[in-house]
Image: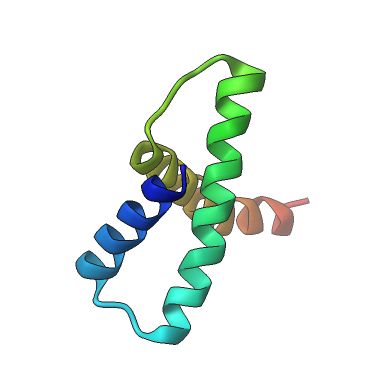
Length: 75
C-alpha cells in the first residue's frame, strides 16, 4: 500500500509540477481518496484502482463545490 501511495504521489507530482505547499494540500486529498476507495470497496462493493478513486474523489469534490452552493442559495 505504501508503495502504491509513493507511485501515485510521484505520478501526480510529475504531472502537475507541484510546489511544496500544493503538494501538502494534494497529500491530504490523496488520503481522502484512499479513504473514499476503502468506502467504495467495503460499503458499496465496488473495487477501483487508486488513480480511479482519486479521479472519482476529485470529480465529487468539484461537483460538491459547484452544485451544492447553488442549491443552498435557492430556497
